[in-house]
Image 1 (spheres, rainbow, N blue to C red):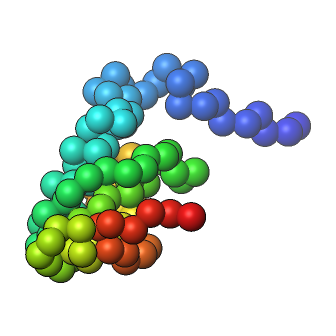
Image 2 (cartoon, rainbow, N blue to C red):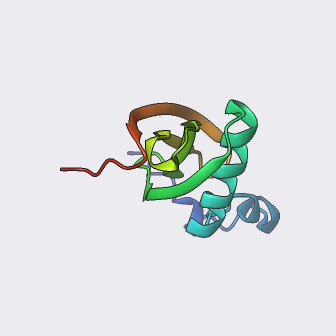
Length: 109
């Protein structure tokens, strides 16, 4: 006799309702808020802008955050950086890395 496959969580009626509610889906706006707040705490840099957002295959979000790394006068010569901030499905920071540095006045080609 073969063993039947285990049902998916959504089909499992034996799981208490409270445990199903503990698995939450983070909305995009909340992901941006969490990413910028946690990024600022970890790096000590103030987020200037969010320039990208996408879901991660493993769950959670990947957020691109621009910051001023070196303020200069005039502002157009300030050194900026783009960081990728990854959050898990619960909104906790799991990775952060600088992707590029550029002057504020530079444009992508």
